[in-house]
Structure formats: structure tokens, C-alpha cells
Image (cartoon, rainbow, N blue to C red; front, side):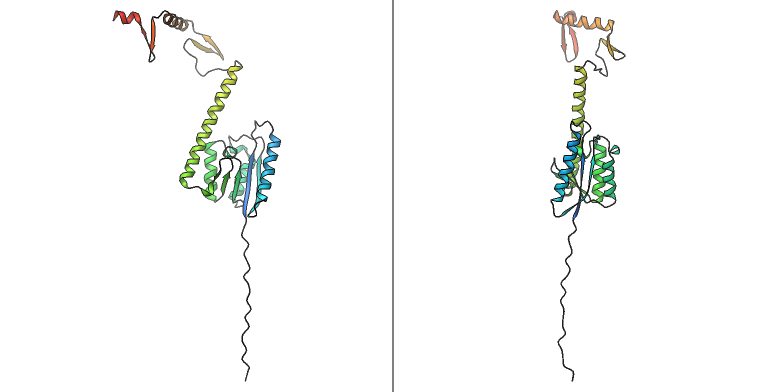
Length: 227
């Protein structure tokens, strides 16, 4: 009779699956009007290389950096476009950017890139504004879009005022339209004689107390008395 033997069971421990690391990239840009482009550029590259390397759950996907390129048009930024191409190819999960203005300074380009990256599942972290698109609701995202547009408008207005002031200080400012009494002769203001007479009459009459300006309408004392 065969001896009954207890079957031997060998327990094989499951092979632990290593958690996939997040592929993190960084985008840096140095403005074309920066007084120290090279040092600023190298500082940003060094910072992001160390920052990504210090996180054990991250791996460096790539660093994209445009030197001395204006942020007003993304088509002129080769590294930005290379980053977008890599995102479309599935090589990037997350992007770190110093600020929204570094990412783009044109509202339409900003919105197009943000929407595409959201559709691709790529999140963006704007460090200066403390904004992470991976943690935003649709309402918060819309608020960001509106805020960016306002920021662009404010910056544009400020730049325009500064430009006008600097040209006025140098004596080369030419307004788009001249006040009454003047006309443009090329780029130089020129007095219109017949209009100048009217201006002189108005000021002289006002100094004599004969005119009063109310809500943009000139009222003469002579007409009031005759009425």
C-alpha cells in the first residue's frame, strides 16, 4: 500500500510592483529685456534640476529653457514648442514653471496651451502664484483664465504709459490726435491760426469773467442777460 504523503505547498511571495515615478519637466524663460540674462537662465536651470532630483517620487523628464525670447508669441519659442510636442508624445506628466507670465504673456496662447495640456492629462505648477492645475475645479480654472487676461491687460497698459512718459521726456512723443488749435505736420504739432483765435478768445473771456464752463457747455454772461 502506498504511503499517503502530505502535498508540499511552496508559497511564492508576490513580486512587488514598483510605483511609477512622475515624469516632471520644467520650463524656464529669461525675458529679452533682462539685465543679466545668462545668470538668470543658469540659475533657473540649476534650481529645477536640483528641485526635481530631490523628490523621490519624481524623475526628470527634461528641462526646457528659452533664452532672451519674448513671451508674447509662443511660435518664436523653440523650447516651449519642443515641450508641447513631448507632452503630446506622452513623455511628460507634470510641468513646473516659475510664474504664469514665464509660461506665456499672450492670453490666447496661454489658454490654448492650458486647455491642450489639461486634455493630455499634464498638470502645471505655477510657483509664484501657488497654483496647481491638477487640483483645480473647472470654476477655479475659469477664474485663472480671467485673472491671466486681466494681468496681461494691466501689464500692457502699464507698459504703454511708461513708453509714453519716456517719449515725452525725450520730446519725441506724438499723440494719435491733436487738441483743438493744433494739427500734425508730419510728426510735429503745428498751430491752426483760425482755431487759435477761438482758443485765445475763450481764455481771454474766461479771465474777464465773461465765460463759465458748465458740463462741457460754454455760457456767456451777455447771452444770459439778453435772455
